[in-house]
Image (cartoon, rainbow, N blue to C red; front, side, top):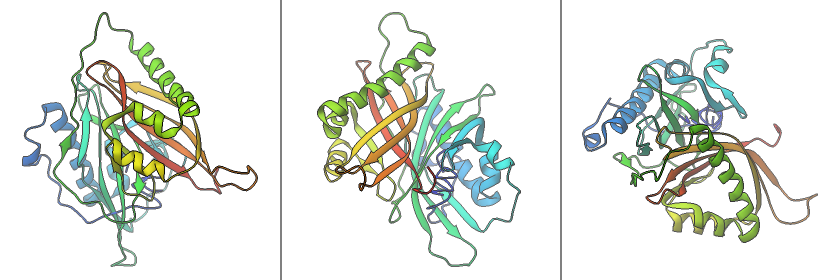
Length: 313
């Protein structure tokens, strides 16, 4: 799921450096989910069950229960979540982590999806400490036993609480393949190459121009320390205020069996323009969700980052 900002950022950023919100009562399937496709309704219900388990049994137990064996979060570098948690001695938990999904999507094949929404970390030691707030992001994959498990989780901190709302599904175009389908392995490779090609476009026409051509109309941009930007116009306005040079390199990708939804993640570097010896440079990891439109073109639906502290490069 992507639940520090080192704990869900680091423990996929829903966890260590910024974690948070008000404890919400979560139900397996709420009335507002009734109009969702069955597979997406199942995914959203699982996300809510994940959150409820976190409140009732604690962060560690919930992540062990709902992550895939190879699922990763960022600490601050990508690690296998279950392996990382089991290597740590279990200790009494001094915080409560809760969250609520408000947006997401699922593939036509019903095997890959994502959810995002507000999270809150409330400290119980000392009691009555101010809650920390953020936005989680989790990618889910249907397992062989037909259960949903988190395969990647990354979150951001926000300066204030994000309003919770009824879950809204992305307007999925339900694109149809034309001609014989390529192998999934070649599709994964092609998505990785598209990620690399996007950087080449940035070098040619700039970050705003490149992202404008590739972002979906309802795209989301998640940046640590800011409220998520939703929609192309909002994203363009935000990027216009940020003068920096960027570079990145993808590490891995995956796509759905229907080859209409996929994700990439990798390393990034963002530097202020100016003298290389004095300018500030930020580094970390990015995650991107890609979705094919009705014409089978890949569009960027969500872009989030997990920064690495300056002292931990």
